[in-house]
Length: 212
Image (cartoon, rainbow, N blue to C red; front, side, top):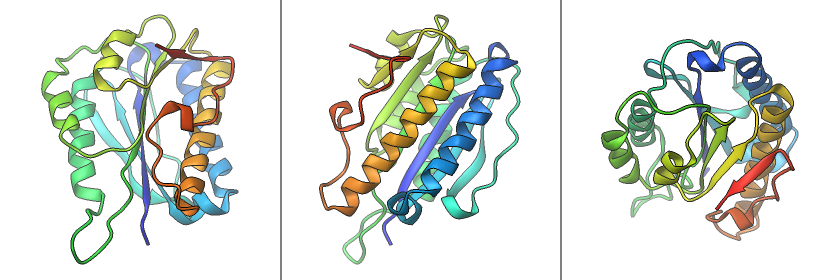
């Protein structure tokens, strides 16, 4: 079976403490339960969660939806975005099955990254490593006014922003991510190929602004 790997890369720095981090936890729960009710997603989607604060860590390795357990996510510390990109590159190498002459590998991974601030480390090395990996759709989200969309544009051209990092807005973002993953898995099932462009995703809700 060809899996559709999905990596959620989430900022858990100190500025996310309180309402934003609770909203992220709820958002992840909603995302999983929504995808579990989608037969296409249930068959193909595997989810991994990488969080980053002072360091980056993978709190959930690539897991099928049916056996996904909600990880512990706490906020505190700095914003090691470069470290998160480097770890993401390593995990893609380790977890995603490559296509060879003998077998079809997994689909190219989808990446949804969310941050509410400026990176506190140098992202150059991590970004270079990440760019060497083959990925499908990469969406970066600037949650609130503290995040720099120009930094995110270095990672991907698909950047969205949230005016605030409150629970309603973050919930809307995760619902849109769920819908985007579902759409991607349905397209694969129908043989329409991999999602590569924002225009192929469901239109984002009013809380989610596309940054051009």
